[in-house]
Length: 343
Image 1 (tube, rainbow, N blue to C red):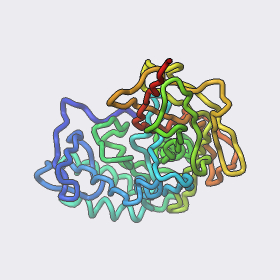
Image 2 (cartoon, helix red, strand yellow):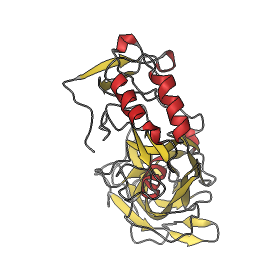
Image 3 (tube, rainbow, N blue to C red):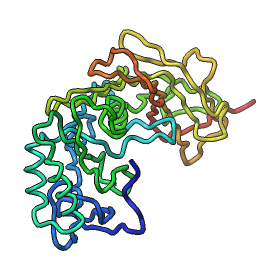
């Protein structure tokens, strides 16, 4: 399918009070999604924005209509951050099809949502009526769902495919039909990672010129997994992304350091992953005081991300691979210079 949104025919539509101030830009030819049909829209029916989930910041909640997100604990650290892809060109799905209606439910939905609709919505409803809503057929109507409120992103849905009919044996699945691979990408995008629980020695306000900075982790620190799953209308599938920490990189935040950055492999122990640079060959050493200011010391963890096509984080890894993830923490450090008197 090709994108159904064209800039030259798009117009802004002010949403309901629940999304006051949100401007949605969609082609005027889009058919009904959630039952808003008004004469002012001249037959154009726009989708309601997804309802934000109150638990979204914790990595648990919902996406779309019936996709559930569950994430493992991230350790004892207080700070978490959304996983950032190491591949700048990687993007999560904008939209996809989910199972929504039996033929009987779909007929009721169309008749209740499109009653009295003007064009082009009226023609869309008539088309479905002529198809007899696939009554007496085995299968379900799947409907397009969006990842978030940003409808200006390209979604490959045309005006005549707001819903698609999916029989039990689907000979040619739509490329945007929900699959474990799509679920894995949604799980990746929902993953919250712990910010690096870095402990500096000397402490961040007492670093010394020409003295190597020792880096260690404080608190437990382990892999993080996130499961996206759906169990609706007899359609059951799941995917779990597993983010395993593999390396810590620290950056001094100034070119007045030697070296300016160091990278350490993370070691798995009984209490999770750890790092202690006490005997490492690389430790950031500041060569100049920060004076009356500070340096922006940054620590970032690289996470190797794999996924399984089940709710089991220990299931076999599947392809295609997901890009590595990153979590970053920045803190201001004060570097002092110890004065000595030569006699």
